[in-house]
Image (cartoon, rainbow, N blue to C red):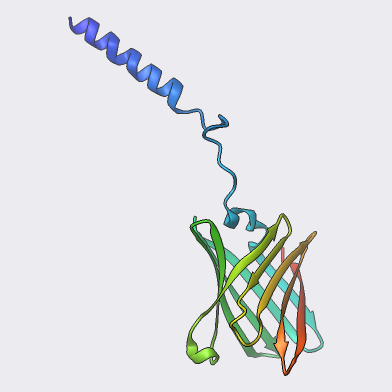
Length: 165
């Protein structure tokens, strides 16, 4: 009897192992999350010009969010600092921006409106400026663009950055 129970348990364990671990089957395969599709943004990016140096570094916090720190430095002075977070909430992705000294120290949320393999677009039509944030990957570079209405006309600012090795 003990031998029969032991054999049955061994067979059950073998069946569970054989049937349960097929992650590559079409039924169990899941499409990449919106956040995972934005993984190309992870890493450090830099733009140096006569005006100063901008650096932006994206890191993975956990399975549902990435965060970034952006600095603009002139000489030895940091003149601008921004904290950003990409957060996956349900089936959507949002970009939450915090800038010291702006918006009463409250973060501003931009909801993703478009995503492709090399492009992310976030919008918040209720925010004064910008209303739209775009990230576009071009090879080993990223172009960040903010845009929106300012003083009755559409304004855009572009920030081309190269990956820092």
